[in-house]
Length: 413
Image (tube, rainbow, N blue to C red; front, side):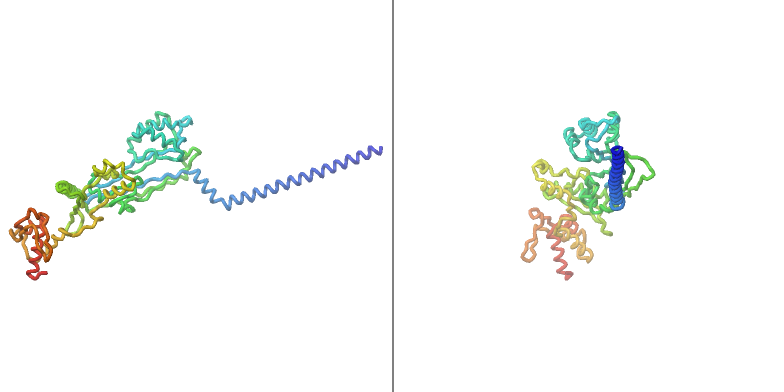
């Protein structure tokens, strides 16, 4: 009986000990969960308050798509309203390599895409395939393509059942209706529609305008989801510019400048400027040789073109800049024969000479001033007897020197 009582006591003690152990474990476990809870609370607070703005911005970027709307570059007109430079809507096509899909979700092989691009846009198949096989996140396959060509490409995509992954974005391309006309004055734009030379560069800020933007929500496949939060900020087009250049006068001047340079074999080319005397407006500013504004990187020197591929990149750039340069305003010249107009004007205004009196001057090929023998450009074929008009038409040095000597002899100068 005594052993049984001891056994009962032991059993009860064991039970009490077991409960105590259980309570201790429960307290430890509860303590562990409380620590985790407080740690999690602190972490959530850190994420919410300390890093909240950063993560919110990252989530917004991940869940939204911002598409730029290119502004239309302003048009350049001549003095009569003729268009010298204009922008037209085109498209640029880009994609993420390996992320173009058929409608059933299968990935479109790069060789299929290379075939499509080469056939529709006259691209080299091997070069296009190499570009598509690159590890770049996004590549522009074709840039600034006319809408008609893009529509044919869209038809090809539909025929191949290609539904996602091809991005066709609206872009703008600069056109110059008259090709070479006033090319060194107007200048041209680069692929990013930024002015590089001439008026296009000098007035780039006014011509460019301000791009717009469309912000939309997107799903995991980056497809747009229409919702009330979509934002549309319209683009602001650039300002138009009117030049004092008259395209008709410009074309006539360029024609005769080219003729004069070619006939007289002027190795360095030539320039000509026509101004309106009453206002100083530039009606024409011509350079020869000029270049085609629609293909500004095509060299205009045939002898240089034959060895173009042998030149270094720096030499090519130097030659292109020489071709683009507007010599009328960038190169320095001594006044020379241009000053004859001032000499003649003074003579006429002060009634020292008349315009068409025969024999006022005599050109023998040269004229001695002090110790200098100043030659006429026709020294071997002297002009002979000349009126003032003839002296100016022939740009005769001796005749204008004689006119200036007349001023001195009459105490005019």
